[in-house]
Image 1: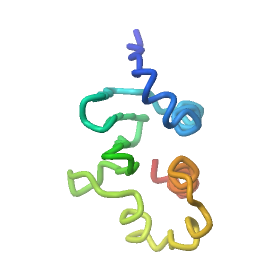
Image 2: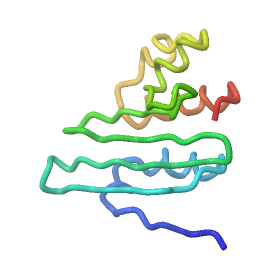
Image 3: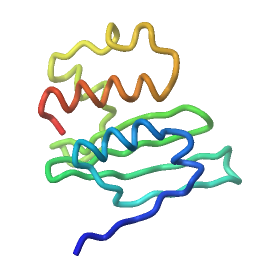
Amino acid sequence: MILRLSIDPEITERIPRVLRYLKEKGFFVVKSQFSSSYFGNFVVYLSSWRRMIRIVNDRGQVFSEIWSWKLRWESIESYLERKGVPVDALQANLTDDEDRLLALLARLIERGAA
């Protein structure tokens, strides 16, 4: 039996393409939290059979992290740079948080890291 967790509509409205993309790539939501009383902050934990990703919205800024082999959360940018993948050029012309996040996740998945 697969447990299907629902996500607060506020989160779905903020990053719909990211959630759809990760679902298509085999990720599922493990946990999510939304707080309207704290600037609309949210956190979503997604997992695939290989990796866990955390997406955090903190005061309007969206961050993405991957659970690293060091058994801690690491930004996807740092993870990719550590693997020799330049991320500055990847994000140079992207101003929308969701576009930036999609570019990072696509590169991560292309590299077989997720």
